[in-house]
Amino acid sequence: MSKAESILRSYGVDHPKQIDLEAIAHDLDATVRYRKLDGSEARIVGNGSSAIITVKENGLRSRQRFSIAHEIGHWMERHGRGGFICAKEDISPQNDRDKGAEAQANAFASQLLLPSYLFDPMVAGLPLTLDTADKIGKEFQASLTATAIKLVRCSERPAVVVCHSQSKREWFVTGARFPEGIWAVTELDPETDAFELLYSSAAKGKTTIRQEPGSRWLSGRGAREATVRTQSVKVVEGVVVSLIALER
Image (cartoon, rainbow, N blue to C red; front, side, top):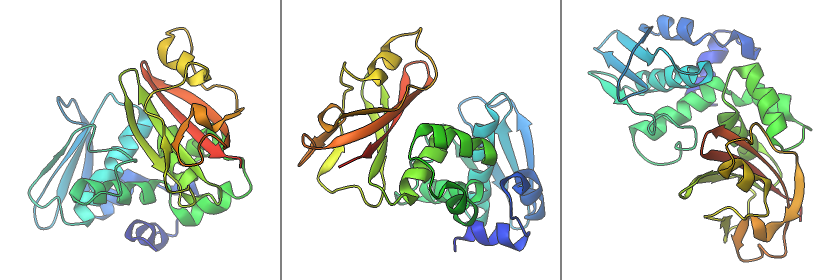
């Protein structure tokens, strides 16, 4: 069990609505406050016994919660003794497997917001789609992106979450059963609904779930023979996140 899950268990948390981050931080001697921040999403300033976590006041609530959990992660991993300023690119659920303080804080945040002991039973048997991630994410007050990544990583089916901007593939995260030697394409295929989402300002929300040739989404050994089930969402203007599950 992770350190974050152990904290939640110690408080008797048995439902997502009970994950009160401000209360958890307070009990760990860290005070959360909301302020206008320029150039960062959140920061922590601490000494040997207490800390202040400052979060960008005008952000999305799901983003604020991940930022709080991220800074609690710094505090619990003893990164916050002195100070830590975290930019938007530092506080990202996809950046939790690298080495370093920010990756450790992201991994901690993901488990604090979406603890496996609550998350896994809730998603068991549900379709591997962004619709599922959206529904479950609302239960945990977590972003669709963070929830989709968690969904793919805990799934028994091979799948990948990928983010594209208009200039490049920003990142992708694969599940444990995703085949080696296959990766998400760097540029979206014009035949995909995600392409329209990305380049049309009128296109909004999530696409419908589609079965498509793997070659539209994947490259590498065996990609052309694969069939995939896909769904995409525009998270902000000019940025699209897609969930791709291998059918065969």
